[in-house]
Length: 315
Image 1 (tube, rainbow, N blue to C red):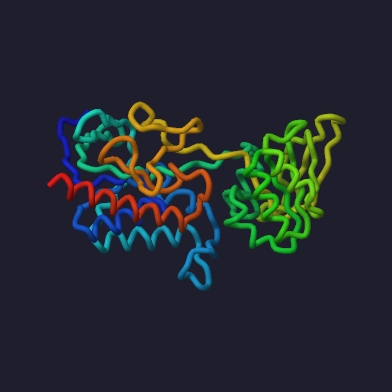
Image 2 (tube, one colour; image 1 turned 60 degrees about the horizontal axis):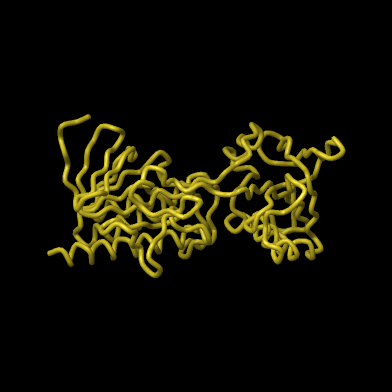
């Protein structure tokens, strides 16, 4: 442990659209923000090949390029962008203590948590290969469904989110095959009925994904196992969507910050306030509904403004 303690007016934990937007607003408000980028600088968007639904990018932009631009914009206003990630916090007193990489101790007047959430994947080597290639594997139908217009895709999942995404894809794609790993849905009855009534959605119950097949660059088909008969089938598809949930990156805050049953930070409705005064949340660490770059950026703005007002009230 370092004996040196750094005092910070506004600490932002995590990057992505939420963190960088918070940094832009905080810097413009002369709050001298320090942002630690986390284990995945730029957040989930760095794994997104094309972003076409963020206002202002007429021709679209790659996820990594967009994050670089947001980072540079924050730097232009004086935000201090650093490598590293928070490994421990102590929010028990008026001064919020945060440790970076188990070695740097920070004492902060305000903290904005923008650690995001990580999509859950099946963990198949072929799935991870095409995910990293940007060639047909996605965990966000709303983000990437447009690229598969009039094509055939496969989605795996059994909950409300999976049903919502399958229904969304059905309006864009020629055919959607839904793989449900058990004998029943986990979704609400109304969501299950919606996908069952959609003509171009084929539901295969009790099926496991075995492999994502392709030419090494793009996906061509999904191999699945019928667990009832033992038969292996190959489903032609150019896209494979995984909708088995997200895990919010909030474990280090659980002793101090109120979380819901799945680990998302609970904020006061209409604000970015958490249960700890001076600690705010932005982006997917609290949002399990929308999970879009534009909504994350909006809450980043809210968190910076709320932090500014908090500091003003302390003067």
